[in-house]
Amino acid sequence: MSLPVFGVWLTSGWEGDPGEVWCVPGESPGEALAWYRLNLPDLENKQRAFLIPVVHPAARRNGIGRQLLRHAADRAAANGRTVLGSVAVQDSAGAAFAMAVGARAGLVEARRLLDLHKVPAGEFARLRERAAAAATGYTIVSWAGPTPQEYLSLVAAAFNAMNDAPSDEGWEEEIWDADRVRDRAGRIVRLTGVRGYSVAALHDATGELAALTQVEVDPERPDWGHQGLTAVTRPHRGHRLGLLTKATMMEWLTTAEPQVERVVTGNAASNQHMIAVNETLGYDLYPPGWQFCEIPVKSALRAVPVERMTDTAAIDALAELFGCPPGGSTTAASNLSRLQQAFSVRYAISLAHQPPTSCGSTAGRMTRRTIASVRSTWSGPSTWIAASATGSSSERGRAIRGNYPNLGPTRSRRS
Ligand SMILES: CC(C)(COP(=O)(O)OP(=O)(O)OC[C@H]1O[C@@H](n2cnc3c(N)ncnc32)[C@H](O)[C@@H]1OP(=O)(O)O)[C@@H](O)C(=O)NCCC(=O)NCCS
Image 1: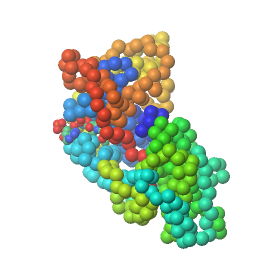
Image 2: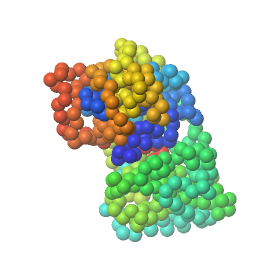
Image 3: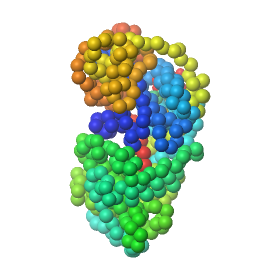
Image 4: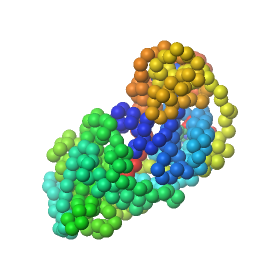
C-alpha cells in the first residue's frame, strides 16, 4: 500500500468513518513503535468499533498488543460501543493474537489474483460478448475518476446491493444515497493520485443502475490493479451482468493501463456467485486471505489487565511525533488541545512504555514522515531504528533490517 493511500486510510478510514489513531512513539522523533486505528461508524453499526492494532515486528511478544487492545476497548466503551471487530491475515501473528485474547473468528475472505500474462489474447472480448448475449436491454457506461454528479444516486443503488454480500451476523445494513456516495465513496481516488475506473450497466427500460464494478490503479505500484466493489442490484441478477461489467472493465484496463500485470480481489469465501465470475475471468486463489473476528468490548477490557497511565510526558512526546506547531506553552494539556485542533481525527497517547522524547520545538507538520513511520511498522521498512519496548538501553537504537509481509488492512467491498 503506497504512502498516500495509507495516509488517507490512517487519518480517515476507507469511507470517512470517524475514528481515532493512537500511537506509541519510538525512540526517535517521528517514529512509531506501535499504533492502532479505531473506526467508529457514525451512520449504522454505531454499537460497533473496528480496530486495527499494529506493533512493530521487532517489538512483538512483549505484551504491547494486549495493551493496545485494552486501550482501544476503553476508547470504544467511551464512545458507547459494545463490540470490537477486527481483521487479520489468516495464520498470521494477528490471527494468533486475536484467538489468544478470546476473539471469535468470523467471516473468512479469500484473496484471488488475475495474472494478465496468463490470459489469452481476446479472452476478455470473448467473455464480454458471451455475457452480453444473456444481457439484452442494458447499456454499458463507464467513467474514470470520481463518480460524475449524474450517476451519484444510481451508484448508491450498487452500494446498497452490497448489503446482500455475505457478512457476519449482527451487522446492520448500510443505507447509501447520492450525498453519501459523493462524500464518502471513492475517497482514495479523490484524495490521492490513485486512478479509478468504473463500468456500469444501466437498464434501458427503467434507467436504473443494474450493475457496477470498480478498479483502482495506484501510480506508485502501477503493475497492480485493485478490484473494488462489484454489485448487481437485486432485480437484475441472473443476466450475466457481473461478468459483462467485469470483462468490459478488463478490456478497458488493458488499454488504459497497459502496464497492469495483475489484479487482486477478495471475497467472502462463501460468495459463490462472485467467485464463479472471477474464476471465469481467470482469477486463481492467492492465499493467505483475511480472517475477520470480533470480541465484546467488555471481554476485551477484562481480558487485558493493564495499569492506568497518566502520561503528560507522553503527550508532549506525541506533540513532537506529530509535529504539533510549538505554542506559547509547552504543557501537555495545551499540546493535546493543539494536536486535536491540528488533525481531523484525534491523536493521543496513553502508553507510557516508551521513555518519552522531550517535547521539541519542531515547527511545521511532520504528518507525512510520521505516517511513513507508522506504515513502515506494517508493510516492511528496509531499515528501521527502534527500541524494544522492554529492552535495555543497550538494545535501543539498533537497526533492524528486513522485509515484512504486507499486512495492510483489507480494503472493504472488494469483489
Ligand atoms: C497482532 C499484534 C498487534 C500483536 O502484538 P504483540 O505486541 O506481539 O502482542 P502481545 O505481545 O500482547 O501478544 C499477546 C498474545 O497473543 C499471542 N500471539 C501474539 N503473536 C503471536 C504469534 N506470532 N504466534 C502465536 N501467538 C501469538 C500470544 O498468546 C501472546 O501472548 P504470549 O506472548 O504471552 O504468548 C502484532 O503481531 C502485529 O502488529 N501484527 C500485524 C497486524 C495485525 O495483524 N494486527 C491484528 C489484527 S487482529
